[in-house]
Image (cartoon, rainbow, N blue to C red; front, side, top):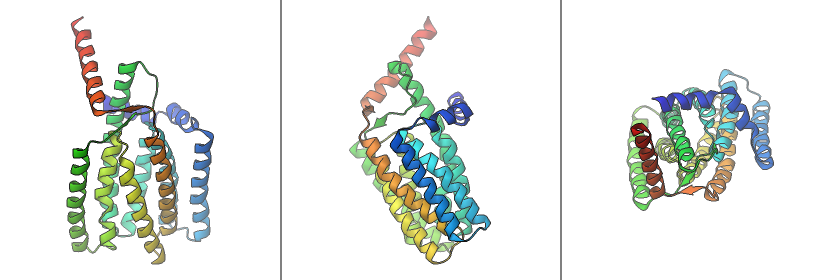
Length: 272
């Protein structure tokens, strides 16, 4: 519970939020500017300014900051992630996208799980190597974890398709992929696995298709959401490059060893 509370405090701390928003490379500032500009231009030229459109714009702006902070492994991404997912959920409800609704509910909950896990990981990294870095290190997935992820994805997909069909959802075969891929991507992201980006890229491509269809059908807030999907896809390629080129990578064995060392240190300190 202490890790969760500390994580939430750090994630919403105004000073830390500003520091992490300003601590980007020139290329990342350019990427942020392009993504934000795309959101604003699409909103203006859509010519529709209803509640769903404004909510979609707010969601898009929050998600842009969330994405770039995830790319860098920064804790404050969860503040923007919560705001973006909460507003996105509203738009998904208006568009009757059952799979997307389930996905956003899941994402909102997982922001708190992510804060807890990342705060613990950052603390362990500092204890293990006396590092002052505020970036979560990347991990490599094992073959059995990958197999489990595939089986889980297929099982959840079938459940969502059945539920969406029974409740009158639209684009159920595409929409049904959102929750299982989102769960896998979110869980892998929370625990710092590079392979999260495979799930995110698949998810982003499918979302581009879904929201293009919604835009063609005149769905509320669809223009802003479609442009957001394109922005997320572009960022997905950048995030993949960053995480697969990280120098600070830890293996599962190293992770377990660092946890063991941290535990032993705590025990020794308690005995002293």
